[in-house]
Amino acid sequence: MLHLVPLVVALGANQAFAAYFVYGHLALLRQRFDPILSSGEVSSHVHSIVGASAFTSDMTFASAQTSSCTTAYVQDDKSGYWAPQLFYKFTNGTYVPIQTSGASTYWYVILAAGKNLSVVPDDFRMLAGNITRNTYNASNAADLAPSWECWGDDYGYQFSVIPPIDCLNLRPQASLLDLPPNSSSHPPTIHFPHCWNGVDAYLDNNAHVSYPIGDPENGPCPSDYPYVIPHLFMENYYAPSGFIGDEYEWYPGCFVLANGDDYGLSLHADWLNGWPSGMLVDAYEQCGEALQGDASVCSVLSASISSDAAGSCEAEGQVVAEAIGINDPLTLLPGNNNQYNSSSSAATGYPKVSQSGYVETAQIIDISDTTGGQCTASVCSPVTAGSGSGNGTTSSSNTTVASSSISAASASASSSSASPSSASASAPMTSVSSGSASSTLSASSASGSAMTSGGAVLAAVPPSGSASSPASAASASASDDGEYVCTKRMRRRMTFD
Image (tube, rainbow, N blue to C red; front, side):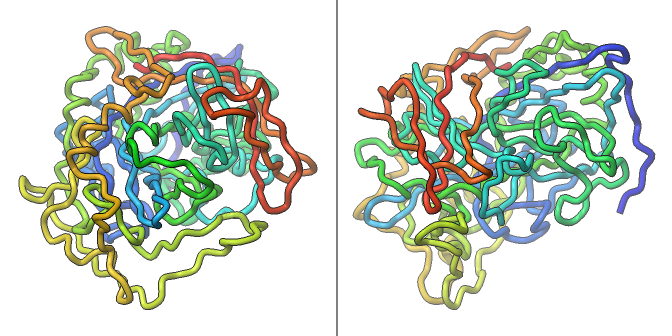
């Protein structure tokens, strides 16, 4: 346990301060790794991983610094970022991971007048969301932190869980920046906590950090977590029909998180710090409110900017020797992960049930030219060495089903369709040049707020017509077994740097 005197930097001593920068990441790995909760071991479920190339099951701040590159636009950011992989389930019951165009990471600061920003220890780690969550409480900041968005060219619907409608583009998301800094309303998003106890780099159960009171964006920090740290939040991008192709068919329950959750309350994410000591706070201190999205305007960050290095970065650490469905669909999700509904009020599918006789047999192996398993330009190759052990169940292995397969060739060919910037999904994303480099991703955001009644989550009625031409407003009705939250949102286009 680290005990440190926190370094605080005064920003905006006499006025409120707001600044941010953001950049997109191409995929690095899709593996059962979680160096925070399962250090040195095969983790419980598959994660979609971006960040430093030396990502391993036991990654630390020190090992991250040995990376030759990172998927981050700012190459000095050798952090690791990960979230559960999203799978598509065919109607015959088999699963494939949706290969996305990657993720985007936002670094955002809102400081009230007189507040200070704290520098975290080098080996700082934290989680967002809660994999065990099974309820929704609109007055709880932690429950407001994760959300999902279903969007296209001229519409956007936000949900507290996996959308119950067909989505041209699907985003486990964060959309804070469409709101003014002092807005009293907000969309629920996948924010990381930004209130810290000022002492520990990490504590079990994420107890070293806290969400603000009531509002994950702008609420006051609890008295026992008085130190404000830079506010991280992430977005992942999926274009399901663009990736799956002609075999795609939307139906309720077809999108499943890697831990088996087909409802989405368990959405979560992880961050392991890899920034050089104090550099992140230095950027805000030296560049101030000039940071309004574009990292290249700040000399602290621009010195290491390289979109070429970020776009070509490949993993150089480890993979798990198992099939995860990249070549052919799986009959079972990797790990002990039967499909389930994460809502405790669900009529069926709750709680999660373990696979009978499950014994973990997957092994961690080093990446090599023959191993496979890493991602390049968001096209992920299957593990080709020692992957026969499947997911380790004694009753049934992680076998593939050829009758409803997506071949490696078709997966690769459709990777461009999976990208929000090129998908036939009618939501083209703008790329812009920033300094000497140009972004590879961009996003759209808009305001809205969750509709609730007495803390109960409402069930959204899908808009009339197709998902690509929704009604002008989403209606909702109370339900004790559906629990969907839906909000019609006007979209605002933003660029990623």
